[in-house]
Length: 123
Image (cartoon, rainbow, N blue to C red; front, side, top):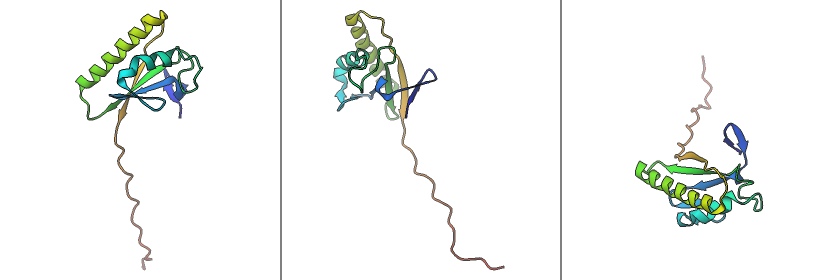
């Protein structure tokens, strides 16, 4: 299923999924390794098929858990922006930080089908 960014479909490889404490790419990484993974994601240029095709197509998706509060979200966004700024300073290029938000919600079970009796009603 493609992601839509600015109304246009984009491939999943251009998305770096981040949860509160982990990066969901490869086999998964700790948030501690954010700077290295951001650099690899943005500067991949299609070399590794599951990282971004180009810096212009790369973006981050932050998955928010309903149990987390605003302070935890703020801390995560600060980590992301600081790490991104360090990467941008290192590469001395004009890469843009794009962040989308997704919410982790529990999906309720589907409703039960209506009960039908096998009995034929007589008039």
